Image 1 (cartoon, rainbow, N blue to C red):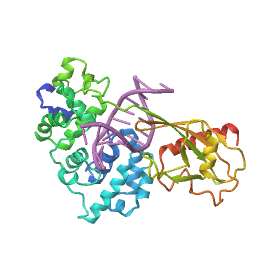
Image 2: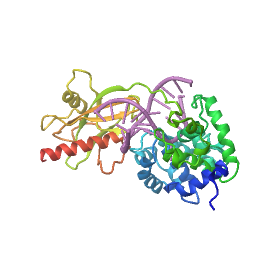
Image 3: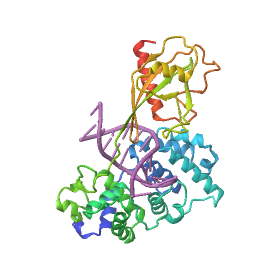
Image 4: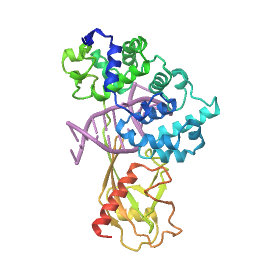
Length: 359
DNA sequence: CACACGTGGCA
DNA sequence: TTGCCAAGTGT
């Protein structure tokens, strides 16, 4: 005699669904470690679980607690974050660790106090407070915003302050009415991530379907209204690829421009229309060459609204010790400086072309 | 409030 | 291939 799910409260149905369907993720091991919860939440901001999965364990192994993190340099932390994107998050996590070290030495336990830490906004504060410290406070991330917008068939814009408050009025009783608040929050996020998807929601598998007004009205995917996006900007860069006999690459720290600042990449410059990529690359590096500059297959890289086409030029320097060549030489297999995934893409095209050329 | 920031996968 | 994202925060 299975009870009718419709008779259970929303929160109870969510918890039951979570018990049977939530993914096992490294940061969900019990008991919850507040530090691991914090790191995972920061890593997950504006990114997807799969992206974080391969990086999380290595990061917390290198920095198992806030004290270890505070003792590291910012550059070391950035290097461990390399490839995850939104590098400001890593800088702020590092600042956070040092701020905690300068204060009580322990993470605060309330959402209000957590929200004062660098990099911790309303979402992360509520997530850590509820998941790690059992505070009954709702989270409102992109997943929960979508789930709530659909259940309520919310007609307004849920991204405005008034819209968010309307959704929170519905969410608050859910996390307060009983059961672990963190798990109710996690269930809503998990539901949004795996069932109540942006397009083609799987309503047949949704524990909230009986109460979902958007589903009753048909076309639940109409909620929430799409966000307006900025037009893409096309940009072309030249990258000077210099590799020494040991396979190390010449890299420099990006100090100009709005993008990738502070990270280390092969020398890069914008390519003006009509300019010669080979000449730009040679000017960037400045050393004498053993062989003519060799253009490689171009690489595409997108950052926010910029679509960047990178033209790599392989430069065979006659001497990597030339005084005119500035920068550092790093082993791509274990970069000791923070790099962008653009670096990995450049390495890949270089390897491909080397094999093709039979070098 | 608008806009900025990285990334890789998918339709 | 191109466009559209996905567990936000700071300015």
